[in-house]
Image (cartoon, rainbow, N blue to C red; front, side):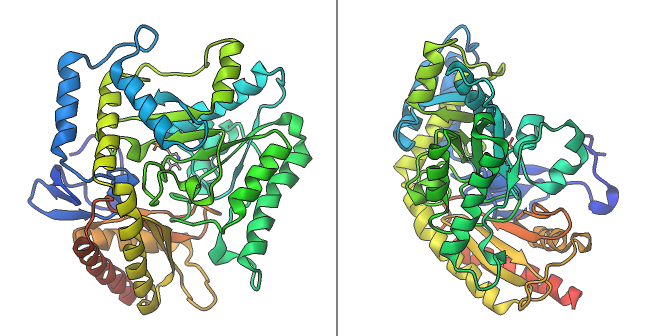
Length: 444
Ligand code: PLP
């Protein structure tokens, strides 16, 4: 019996035990091979079993793994901070290190609130976010999340802020141009700010590309530019949640770079350490940090493992690996190939309503009726069946279900390591096609 956590027996047999990984492949102890078609949880972006990361890990462990952040900084931490400042847009030059994406978004939320307090605006403490968003599972992060299924049970405990509509081009009002739709969605932010009063709003948070709650939903051009204008007009900070999109995943250093918009705060995780260690960060601009430094001088956040040298050394080695192997550029090139192959599948298979994505972050949405775009009820478990079938065939893909209303919305994320070759993409597509086609047959 596996004692790691509880799952209902009818959801499937217990998990196989992983034995090792190499490149885009994972192997279980029975010798089965799996293509990691979603980098786990869109995390293992440099692939599995990279020797030089193991070496960096060992080298740091031999000198010092843990030193508490209130006692010491370290070369690893400072070099990682400097490297991220090189990567990040504008004056996002400061990193506060944590251990998960949830901690990163929650820390960004706290820094935003504290910034306004230090400036003398103590009432600016609400965070506006969007439906169909996921910012993490801890209570502060879940409060900002619009992922209906994940939040429903805990609603009475959440410190809920206002939520606006996400841009969801596939389901925009019929006949509306993408340009008009982008503006209409962004303008909802202005309405929300005016309703509660800008004097109560600290920040707006959004994922550049919607991940876990929608399946790689890319906003129309113009959306984030308008968001930035509105934030500036009402003195509201813009937090880009780059936990899934950051560090090259979308074919640019950060997702928001596709629209040339500069956030005030950025949350990073996942690809920042590519799964080799728990590591994440909240990044802030010079203005934010200087304001806090001139005021109380202390960011009121942090965890025991924040800025530990071990995780910093591993994350730094991952960033250097991404640079050395030009994985950001490869994510753009090969991601375009992956999306073209997914679009071919969408043309062939009636179950796929849309194939979409940016760089190596792609998604498929499944529908009951391709013409009307009618979704399946979630209770039918279409996504779960496809994922299970793919698993049996040796392909891992990631669910993105029920994020919008908790009732419908079947989608998956296809986001292999950025190192994947075109031949390996073809192999992934073949297994994906077989899996979807076989579930489709069962449904007809
Ligand atoms: N933000 C985004 C955009 C995410 O996709 C996730 C995880 O999927 C998180 C935050 C939470 O990160 P973690 O699971 O590391 O806490």
